[in-house]
Length: 184
Image 1 (cartoon, rainbow, N blue to C red):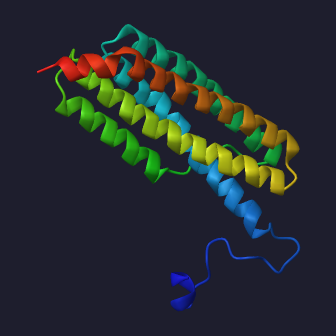
Image 2 (cartoon, helix red, strand yellow):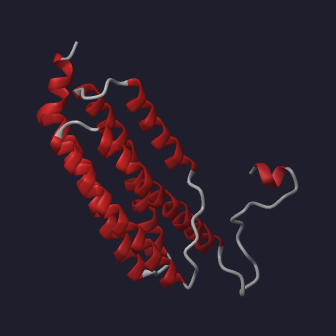
Image 3 (cartoon, rainbow, N blue to C red):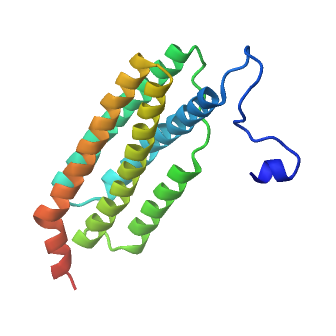
């Protein structure tokens, strides 16, 4: 709306020229580029969380998700290919902010404590919830746009993100939260 008030046009305005891509397709491609940046960013930041974690089950869960994240990057590259587009990342401010918050939690908690592990779980779940929302929305858009093969790829990744979130919840509930509660 702001752009219209200033006389400009919105970034994803509907097109009247049949040769131009529809606004929804443009928004979809832009969102894929955003998520591509986010997943690549996680490949770089997850090793820091692995190093900072203490509980073996948490280290294992993050390590496993790092390997999944590398596959997610490859899947997004496949999505770009199916769209006939070059795989180009668009900076994801949301993921950058969430990961900075996670780094702050690590800096503000004592090394080797369950409290730090709880903080890492909280930060990791924020990442997972952002990814779940992103993949879920993009899956719906792909379905709407008739991009069945792409929708299937996004749905597969969405399921893995939900599993990763559930695993983090289980780790927190089964031991780490209780250990942290006993720390001074």
